[in-house]
Image (cartoon, rainbow, N blue to C red; front, side, top):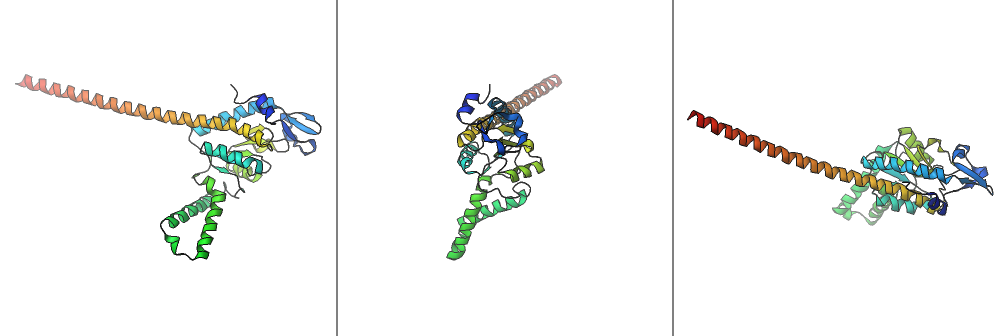
Length: 269
């Protein structure tokens, strides 16, 4: 069963592309028609692509790896923050920090710096600073939180990138391509899909369109996380059962050995 359908996508306006003169010819396979100078996307293909992307995202989540969501455009920020937070995945909704992926070690140092400021503030180390110095530290902490707070838990490179608008986030896509990190993206008619591993052809400007696509993908990720959790519980239960069985077998062997020794002692007597 598909995770979305034609009617839902149509109602959300996912089919509206850009003006014909702004199109990228590489998106031709996903365009259904032109109407009043605007390209209309083929939503039947969008349904298929959403399913493909959702299944792949589910498997990544099930393996315990992280998916980094990227959307710095105004109409996508709130939606992406809400959806990514709901499944405990990292996200970037402010300016993309150059080298976020290709220079990941430096980004991690900045995150650690933020943690150190919190630690030193908590233990009173900064209590003796002058007002000016305290203000500088406070501003630095606020800036770090704004730009990197949402990726503080990302201790290693993400297993995938989910991007809203590859044209706007081309630096992020380029970094992912360079490192071989798969890119999932909502791609509109004015964008190049060639650098995207899982293309979801849809309107990337309307917040309702973005939300509908994200709902389907996030639901799949949530399923993957639940299945991972269930498998871990089953594995722990199986381990406990095996351990219990091992102890029982050992006890039976000990009792058999004791009986054999007793019989041998009686025979000698």
